[in-house]
Length: 566
Image (cartoon, rainbow, N blue to C red):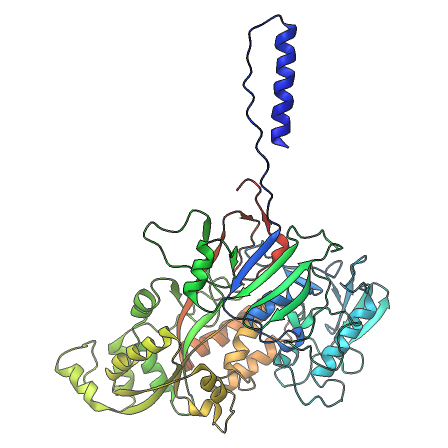
């Protein structure tokens, strides 16, 4: 278009000059260059494929990033907003609660179709919530294989939040009411999670999971799912009748590239436009290639921690361990300054984060004094790491605990080396118990005749939000009613406060409850030694525009386009 305007301007100028009697004017008209076609294919790299294709049976990030291109929920997070505000998506507007806090009425968006041509309406919403209810065993029918995400749809008591006989009331063709059995203030956030994404009733089995290897997901999103080749690629093409506007890219391919060196080579030769996940490629001698954008978007919402088995390691020893760890070495050396210190399960940008809550820092004298005060020893409590006092602590061997980790993780392996050194200075012998990731997970879930979390004493893990709620982050790791409570932590006050917060409608009171919970966990009970929050890096070709940078690291191919001038 700009080239056409220049040509027109030159012609007009020629006419003016001739009309004015000025001769001997020679205009040098540049040779027209053919326009380079802009690629309408987006190639994305990721390190592993989806664990599950059915939205109701998955919770990990790669599955989310794949499903999100195809399916949509009633609400979503505004990925362009740093605060990740909840906004309507397939809902026409925000819902309205009744006075009981148990019924949320939602107007639905009109003129929306699934990829198979099925119209989106109230009947579809009701069908999808009935499917959720069935899989959660909320209808009375026995589903012997609960979805991995079933805990998201339950009160801490284990009771399903939805009305078992009538989860959704149809008010009109485009208006529904979601019915709960008791107030649940987290519902809007939960509706942003992929378990609440809408699937076409025509092509989705109501009482069976969609097969990851051979099945298809059919949604209302900007891309149509084509196929998945294990260990190779996932293919999509554009939905030309998308209700907002068609995506810029006609084809979307997600390549599974497990090797980090191969991933970097794919970035260098531009066969990959975008890398899913928190990936910062290694620097070359001259820096990053000119065609690559590395965007630093701040601190992530996930956190890593050292879990301590509360059944075997009492509070005295948990507190001593927490003060004996060299967190500076972890951040500066093991993580190369690409992380920030964690002060609990909620990152600074997480809702309800309390900046006054502080986790233990390295203080060897304090760690030793805790042990002395417990009358375990009369050794001198100071910060000596060498010399006779340090040697006496090393020789004490008050406790011996194993450290379990997956040997494929360079960081966790080297954390074990650090723990051996650090904890030896307070009289703890650490036994290396490295294993494969498969064995680690099998033991975690009690498979293969293992004792589950009882088999672990010390182990390092990470956790991120299923959806943007502090309740979700806290209950997963610190409620004795959670299947992910790897430290087997139990505190009666914390359980009571968690029960209160899930139905507390007053925002100020929720803040107070969360602060009390975090204080008890982080500063008193110390079931974990809190390590770090990762910094977030986006890696993509610099001709991609409108890339949504967000602390959820959520990928949205619909919002991205390619710069024709690059």
